[in-house]
Length: 241
Image (tube, rainbow, N blue to C red):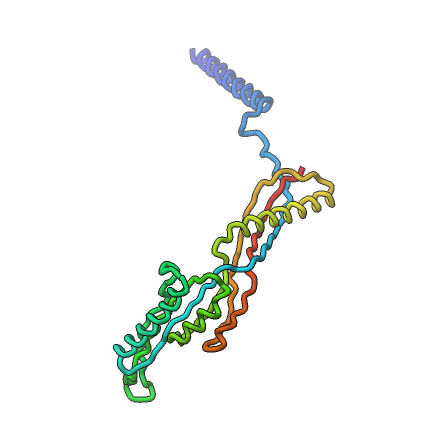
């Protein structure tokens, strides 16, 4: 009986081993999805393109206001307020709506005499600055001169920009894409390959305002106006065929 049981066990083991070998052989002949090769990496031509459009600006952005020092803070505040009322009246008379005038700075600075023991307070400096978006730019010199006459003693600066740069942006974008395409076609021709469709496109743009230094008094009458430039840069990956 023991020999019969042992023989039966050996036979079952041989059958199981044979089944495992058959399964492994079938897997080698018919590999599943896990055995499939990774797709080849897409070959690309990467290029950068740039487009620039320069236009005369139609909006001036002016930052100006009044600054006053006085031993009494209330006196300094009242005088600055009086000056600012006169300055804002100049812009309102020139047709600037209130939504185009924004306060950007209002400070009361305590000044001390640090040459004396304990640094006693000697007065207060009050500053009030506004940012004004002004049109037309041809009248900037005139309105600045009138603002100075009204009491503006701080003109931080003036810059020129476009109120609606959408048209210039579209033109610059078209030029940038055209520039990138031309470069990609030249590279494809030089390397003996065919240029395929774009696979990736990224864009960056800039439209910096034109800074202008302005003086006060009579010097504020003449303000030079240049051109503002909208720049679009693109980075494009084209398929290589």
